[in-house]
Length: 231
Image (tube, rainbow, N blue to C red; front, side, top):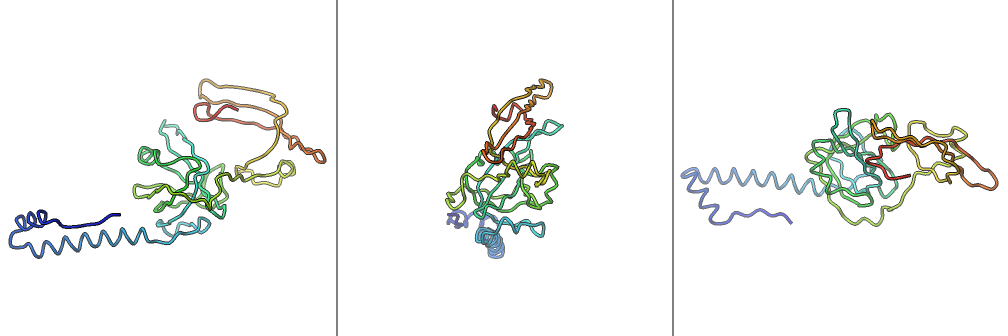
């Protein structure tokens, strides 16, 4: 709980400092604190909004979400920023970015699987070359973004955007949207590690293991060995 009070010593110092203009100065400060406190309580009292409704008409969105994925991206200038996939109770997802200059402020509060109340973002178009969600917009953290960890059991901990291998084989997918697949790796055809850029590449065969309609796909898997786990 946050409260404001004016101890006698504080008032006495104000009176001494402002001398004869104490009354006017006191009411000016009171109005200032009242305005700040009213804005704070107004912000906290905003209703929860749907992730699916997020657009660039405003920045003061308030959402309850779970962090589905969370990773670090290094730019060509060697600066690192964070990217997150956030999922809501209706399984709507949106991608969020923590810019490099704010990483130290928020990285300690973020964890995969944790649920949060979040509000106040910059909203921009989802212009990623490869999109982690089909949402038309993405969220960008700013200095005033509010993040509070809280228990939200209504949001699933494990959620996968699974696309069947048969749909991929039939071309029924969006080529620039990342999806989850379930299958068994039947053969690793190639393993390549590039020491210059710290990236690895795997070429393998995957199948849906179906007895009646088996599908086998030839896949490429590329990652940054520094930030990704072993395959």
